[in-house]
Amino acid sequence: MVKSSALPGLLLIRGLGHSGSTILDLALGAHPSIVGLGEAVRVLEQPRLGEAHKGPHQLRGALRFERRCTCGALAGKCPVWGPMLTWLPEHEDRSLLEKVDHLITPFTSGSARWLVESFQADEQLLDARALGRPVRVIHLVRDVRSWVHSEARRGVERHGRGMSVGWRSLVRWWRVNRRLEQRLRRLDSVVFQLGYEELALAPEAALRRLCHWLELPFEPLMLQPGLHSGSHIVSGNRLRFEPGQSHAIRYDAAWLTSPALSLRVAPLLPSVAAMNRRLVYSHGLLGATWPAA
Image 1 (cartoon, one colour):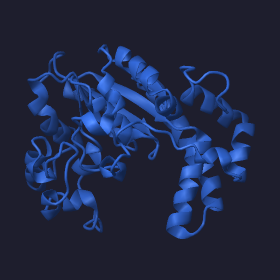
Image 2 (image 1 turned 60 degrees about the vertical axis):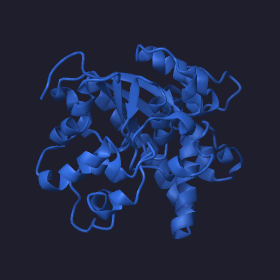
Image 3 (image 1 turned 30 degrees about the horizontal axis):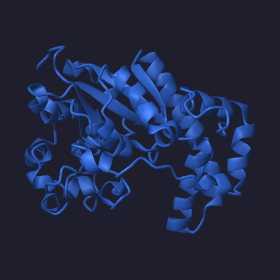
């Protein structure tokens, strides 16, 4: 493995799924010094038994000549993922770090300063300093009420029930974000705390702060990620291909009118309310009028 401080660093977006990682990956990929790789870990990990019907396994076969990368090319012909998807089946026994190293080695020379990996559930790459590259983490957190509402809505769509999903999701939001926050502190990771609400409702201010943290100039094209992103995403949220959905950073405020009890109780739980304020509204970009729990 090449080790040099001049190599582009790994920028990891971590947190809970369905918190805006795909649109953030696309927005970052619109910067000329950043390349988004999407949920690379999801694709690179060896598929388990019974997962032959899932995208990561199928991308190793015929699906790579059917599914498009966000760069516009078919996955099998993408300059980033094409060679990787051909290489993977014969090297499944390699460790995740070795696979990641193989994926990002072509960026050793070039203009990229940061490579974004946005599989939020992964925690293995938090120890990726073994690759000899800088590693920074964006801890992306969506307002507990918005996230719980979104999970409950998906529960209704998939299983016809939402109330029980809402209460379980409330507990999961607190448990997962608490564990990740503590782990990042133990690892002494370089972390940017980003609330999805601040990103979606004050995108320019949030992205300017993020660019400053990355020691890069702000690029206005980041505000229209679907139109200008150079990210290479072959696995992730389907919004990346839905017409108009990724052309700008927008906010779904449906939870504000939800009568769900779990949403109303969340701000009344001291530990949940304190975490919500700390992790989602840390930059104060929305002012005192926004309903921060």
